[in-house]
Length: 473
Image (cartoon, rainbow, N blue to C red):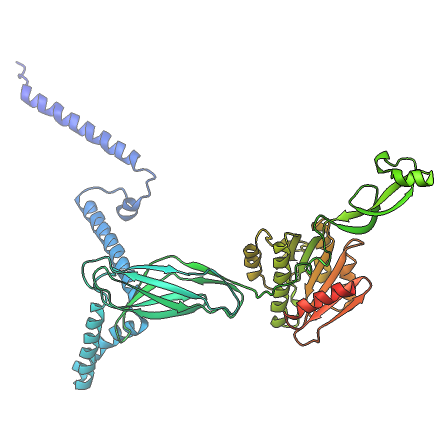
């Protein structure tokens, strides 16, 4: 007789078999899902699972978080602790340990004194700056040598009295440092500081930063406030006569030696030739002579000035010559802009240090307004790789069309032969004036082969030199 089957046992067996099958499929799927995985967990425990693997991962995550927190604290502490503070933090515990081990009371006293200083210094870092600080530069454009100031204004927007603080303002390569007084509720205070203007250029002022430091100098906490401002220090200029910069006095145009059949400036009468326009026939003269006579005019041409400033290091003997040359170019350009003349102010372009060949180009200065021109001239500087006077004249004659008067502004180094060669780069009929800036030379004027050479020692000599050149012309 067959033994009857137990239904409960059969069901339990089927359940166990199903669970085993499901576990094997899960393990298979898990192995497939983690294949090729290279995240932080797999780098630590591989593909292992379970309690111990999870524990190791949790410890690793806690260690990583602690490391990030310590790095943040260290960076903040390192930003406020000075080298003297770090030295004191190392020497104070060392002095205490050495004093107790060796029995030296002096070292113990020094150790405790160092710890007290560190504790007092830490008190200076507590709290935050509640001031509202702004930086202004009342005049952002000045001339070399003129006084210039910057202004820092501090206000107290809180309901409590604020203590005094130290304020630092970077001024170019220097630093302005002063103390702002304590402010009552709603109070404000201003402080002006001097900006040096002894040299032409652009000076960056700011940003303002407040400094909280202990008297010994163990800690130093800096907080930046406002942005920075730029101060343009323009080259010095002098007023020139209204007609000096052109050497040609014209309103609607200046008569030239070129003759034409139609213009404003009358020249003479001549006999009619085939091809002449009938409207130019002068009938009164024709009636008197019995021969057709036509009017002949001198061609009028509006003067177009070009002021070429050499930036080549070899065209100047020293920095004084170059600064004088920049002031000369600025004075000529400003007078031309004020007279509403067609003017172009150009300077030598630089060839990159690793270029294979020389770059023949010029840098055009803005002549829209006086201030724009002086802003551009405030930042020019001479360089070894800038174009010399000969190349500068050649490029300027090509790039600036319709030139009638050309000023070549250089130092004392170029020879008369070089100046004559530079003048020949311009078209025939162009008045070329070379202004030699040499503080050690006697002012003078000489003409060589269609070239006027003005030598000046001071900027004020430019007025007399231009007036003399007009009288000679």
